[in-house]
Length: 85
View 1 (cartoon, rainbow, N blue to C red):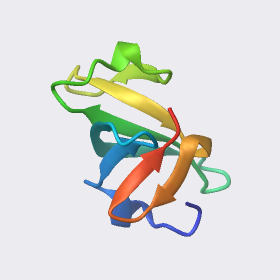
View 2: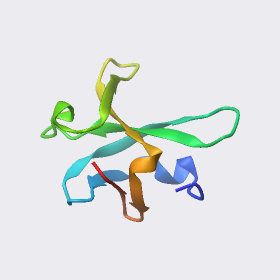
View 3: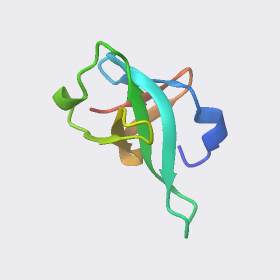
View 4: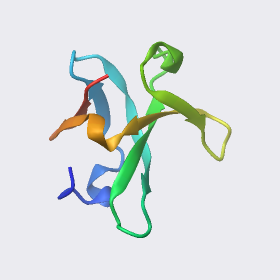
């Protein structure tokens, strides 16, 4: 994950390691001192209840719920961003 550019991740689908589709990458939060990505902010698909996941949730500037996925939960980045829920 550290070698992936944030712009290359934008709009990628996010999937659990169990194959469940979670949503689309909305934004990232970075540590401004180190430049490291801390969290992925995922816009959940309509049929996903973020409260049923083990990740924290937050709201974006449009007051829409987003899933906060710690970068340590990322298992793979290819066609999808695969995370361990």
